[in-house]
Image (cartoon, rainbow, N blue to C red):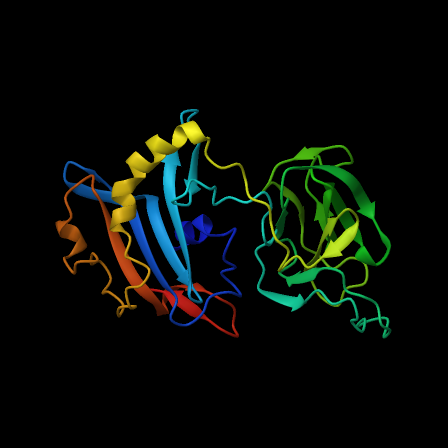
Amino acid sequence: MALKLANVFAWDIDFVLDIREGDRFTAVYEQVYQDGKYLHDGEVLAAEFINNGKVYRALRFVTDTGSTGYYTPDGLAMRKAFLRAPVEFTRVSSVFNPHRMHPILNLIRGHMGTDYAAPTGTPVHAAADARVSFAGRRGGYGNALVLAHSNSVSTLYGHMSRFARNIRVGTRVQQGEVIGYVGMTGLATGPHLHYEYLVNGEHKNPQTVHLPGAEPLRPQMLPQFHAMTAPLLAKLSPPNIPAAGPLAAGTTAGGAPAAETPPSSAFSVSSVLNDSTFSFGDDRSRTSIN
């Protein structure tokens, strides 16, 4: 459930760098029973995450076309047109800095992207739907890919050990699709992904650039959306409620044992972030979900 919760908010919250002590979450999710026996947890139906004082809320909704997604209470898609980070990384080894001293060349050469340190072979994902406009060796970038997106945006992925199968110039890729694997080809002191985000050929900081959102719900769908999600929204705690202490494992927000929850029902579990089994964060600032 921790991973599912992270996936719901992945476009807005960086769960390696953004988590802070005192962050709070509430999740409403399914539990699947058969003949009165608990089988497994189901989908996250609604969730709230308070990160560094900012409130994010998400509601699961199936549209009239059958597609499932998470939306804000206003019907805006939680999914963004671009992933904030295209690889599961262990740390940011170098930030966007137009005036950086190059660690190998020992001269001032702008670092026009973000370096995400990760083990060799870690999958690299397309940040958004795109067409491959370059695939091959490119100087200090080593094995590099350039993806051309709509709205004059392009992204570059450098130092990869190899490309994914069938990746070549002209290939169409979808957001999240594996396009290659982390390596240290070219001028690199260790395995990492060098990632650049460009708008009309101008470099932007990948960690702070505003990411366009996906299409919101159509106006004619909003009445149905509000009617179906209102009960779920009511289960989320108001944003101004003070953070409570962590709940014991296996208890509901009301304190009753989870085992007493009727079969085929959804219930909410609320907790603060503290040291426990599931963790978000890097070694410098590790926080966890109870």
